[in-house]
View 1 (cartoon, helix red, strand yellow):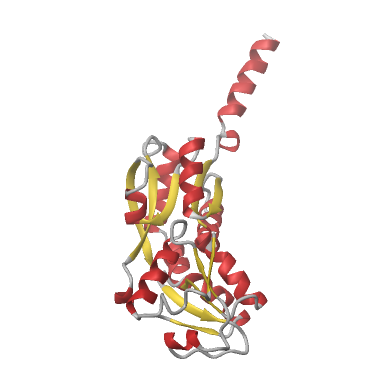
View 2 (cartoon, rainbow, N blue to C red; view 1 turned 90 degrees about the vertical axis):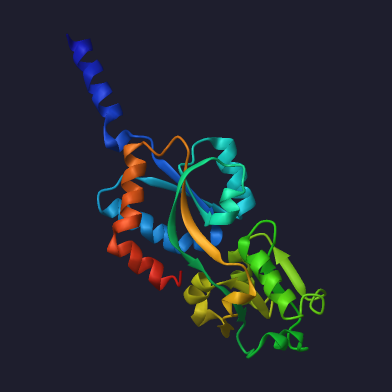
Length: 240
């Protein structure tokens, strides 16, 4: 009887929410701050724990495909649809906005100012790894600056690296998203917002990996993202 009772206790504990396997969300590093806030709000509301993975989108796709443990991927919809991942559904989060930021003690008023001798390096995320690298090159190409700036361009693997270089003064200018620019605005000189017609739209979505769509915990998180006023507030403040 004692062994039987112990067995029941173990089964109850292992099946309780506290011991349930946490779902995992993976996303581009440029959206770590708002997504962390959303997940924190969800867990505070009584939702189950959600683990988080951030990096460039190339890394995210490989890790999601290789691990089999990722339930959600946040990224640009077209990019995710064309990836090798299998999604059950997509849920709109907002729109990504490209900005041209510049460091302290510098004032850039138009894209052509990047040609100034005051600007030695212009950082941007790698085109193949981050959607904002692609957007930055599309913009520079349309304004006729891509070839003229080729000796100044410094490609890095993630968007937060561009922000870090701007803050440290390792580069004078760089392309990031509005979300990161708003978070670091007191640490840089400022930023310009190119017209959205100068690059392809960046539609940000929460993608649910196939196989997780029927899990109660996954449904709960998706519903929270879609209906919570707190999520809408976070997204708005993040410039998405």
